[in-house]
Image (cartoon, rainbow, N blue to C red):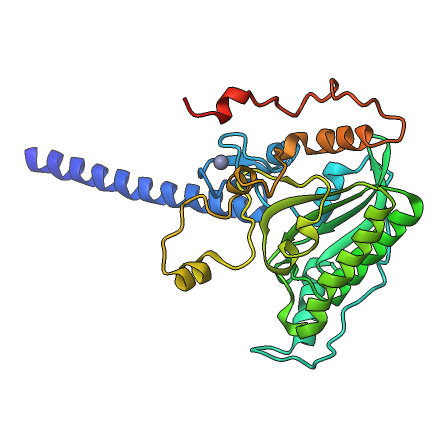
Length: 318
Ligand SMILES: [Zn+2]
């Protein structure tokens, strides 16, 4: 009798474990499936699961830890530009393969694959639109397309955007994110740095405003050209901004670099960045800066609500 009860007890315990394992794995599977379906998003910084809809409503900034998740060019345009005011330009420009470049794969195949998969022509979208009613020329880089690398199309589209803005007397805003020059286009890719910089200089000579917004990551030839040529340079919190990679510099200097090296915060401290602006107030900040730069704008800055007045005492050691 006792044996019977014992074996029944053991059996129910084993059943319980088996059920638990089964339901555990289905829960996990369901969770993974829902993440894969895009219903939920797992924060890469704090690991908290958020409804993608809620995350999107908060501009892809984690509600728990403030981590700025990467956004694609379409989403960024939606976040910044007033509804129904976006007019893309030069959508017909397509990359070619002038060097017949091949690494593990032919460059032309790589381009075609990216274009089919992402429904993008190259790594930047440019156009004219309005930010809180102010007309702007906006360029938005897309990291998904070959790491936001700058080839001839990125260079040409940005140059034409800046030239259009100069003609119309519009401010230029470029949201940067890039791994640098596109090695598959060799020197043609490096030439874009000079071409865009020259167009920006002509824009500047007309006393027009240019604001680059540096997002994670902004590196290489983009940092070495238009990302650092702004009248006011904004960055998103914790964005990695640099020229050469951390590892390359460490190996060259044979020195350990500080933890916050090449972070937006470190660049702000050293004067390379003018302000770090959380994405949730980016549109408002851009609108204020553009408003202040209008010919009829008041000279005082009393209406600047976003920019904190930094207390002088905080910059002085006690
Ligand atoms: Zn988080």
